[in-house]
Image (tube, rainbow, N blue to C red; front, side, top):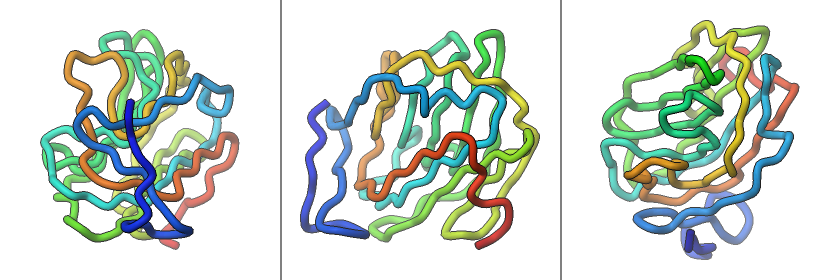
Length: 173
């Protein structure tokens, strides 16, 4: 992709990543993105410019194969985290309309098979997610992997953190 560092809109430091139509980042698959059945945390600050029906923030899933995981923040599903095992998958959803032109902290944390979704530190949804994820594709930031439509996130992302092996948040913080 052709995402750019933007120095005028940022939450921390001196810049953020601007994603949108045709603009995303891709990084090779790393073991840190292979959660298996263990604990993990995925979090980022998001600044939505335009609400779109399906906007993927972080994705290392393969379309139609149920491998990997992705985090969506969109007008269609609100905040949604999906994890696939290769033979199926499941997710946890919180119905909300993303706020425009303001920084929002989004966090997903799994501890002992329970997945929790947080918006601005508030626990908004939880559910059972015991799946053992096998992520096989590169991590895309601001778009979806291997779909006909890439479901671009139109906005800015800052302070993206993926922690394998630790559920950083288990209650409102």
